[in-house]
Length: 199
Length: 69
Image 1: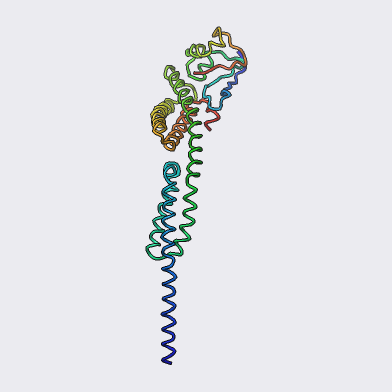
Image 2: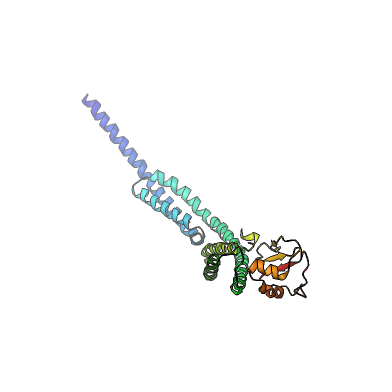
């Protein structure tokens, strides 16, 4: 009986040693994998941070979580995750490039359309301001709304242009879209036809 | 002068925000100005904006596309 207990203890001790040995064996590769993943991420996040910031932020979180697991000794999981992370990091420049192209196209459309719309609204507002009486479908309140929408659209458009000149296309597009919406609203309020490209 | 229906249409460029009015039977510049501005006396502005196609404010033709400032 005593011999059996001693045997069991020895078996358990050896098994534990083997498990520790196997785990420790993964430590080096896990550290290398995290290092490679971090290097791949750092190499590709430059432009990506500008064009796909949410993706970069999520990957920063994933990298921190991976490091945390490494510190806790979860080497096998770290190795698996680091490989997937590295592949994702390598794909970031393509994602950034695609987003940049999409934003550039959006900005081109906006910069062609918005100034024409704002100019048309300004022209109609100028005419209506000269009128002794507003048209049947336009109340003084609606006209005031359109004028305030126009003023705000002009102000925001100037900001969109500044953002674009500063190289911040994402902001320029975001503000430009808001200007377009304001211009469309003003045109509709004034009973004007909205260009097909703006709808 | 032509039919009372008022037609509006945009230009061919999809971002062209120029406002047009297609002249129909019964239209006069005064009536068009009244429709768009609420004030017929502003017809001269429409005439000025269309001087390339109008020689006389009293002579507009059915089907003409007038720019409405």
